[in-house]
Length: 96
Image (cartoon, rainbow, N blue to C red; front, side, top):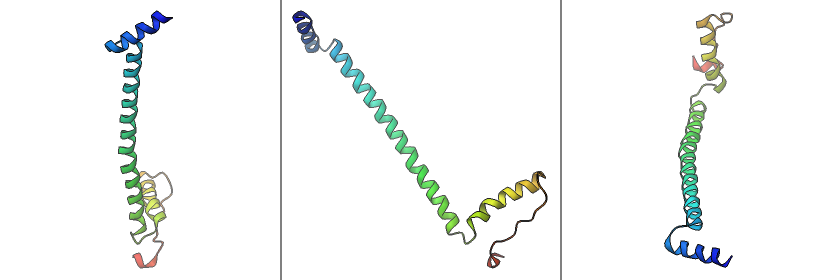
């Protein structure tokens, strides 16, 4: 027991052994976790900003939000002849 403990002290002083290996492994994992956290923050913050700005576009467009979502669906149904031909109508009279 005493010999093992003394050999660990000698290995640590020489910069080798289990203690140094575990320390290096811990630092490597911490660096990988930090890189992953930076990746998440680097993608989620711009992504959330894009969603926020995209929703504001509908708010300030002067037209109804649902109409903006429904019109492309109706156009696709008419173009692909999937459903009956329905004409989209303006939800507000002042748009036309």
